[in-house]
Image (cartoon, rainbow, N blue to C red; front, side):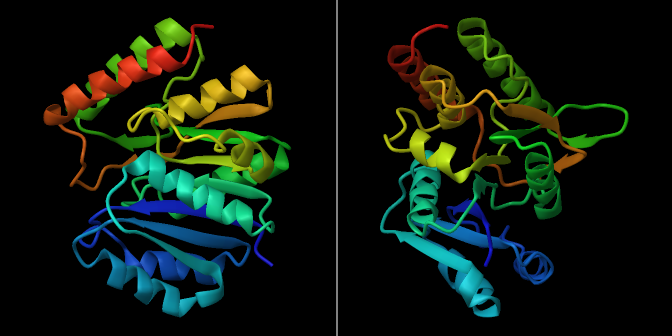
Length: 241
């Protein structure tokens, strides 16, 4: 019986979903289930997800949201669905474009298990032995936001927004009982909720060996008004340390 669930939110991802990569991963890692959340896609995303499920029906779940709710809601829906099965020891999430690839995520999972951690979060830190490929815009925007957030909350996390995170099922289920207040900063909300509720101190930030943005990102300068609004909601709903 698979003990690990990976939530993968999808919104109009037909051009970026790597069907064969998902299928090959499932054939190699029998301890993992994939939970795809189709967040109101208007393209062929739903059909592609069904093709993936045909190859491993017992280990692929598809959640169909009737309309687009945003990544935060999609991931929360996936987590709660996985938790309701009462079979998983770990539940995490990953971006559908596989900017962090599946094997890189699996390495995080193995480290979490080996070190008896309650959670582990991937981090896009450029070092001599890593291969991190980000556009200058994404890197600059990410560093600015990370600095703003850390100046207020002192989380001590270099990269809160990396889309690869893994948690013990009990921890993330408790954290996700209440809906997130923001769309862009739910990752920060998770970390703040962990700290606020003293649910766990056994977590680490792990540099990824490789990360590559394949293009088609939904983050661009036109999103900045929504991001500023979300920063306000974050500050309004979560007090300083």
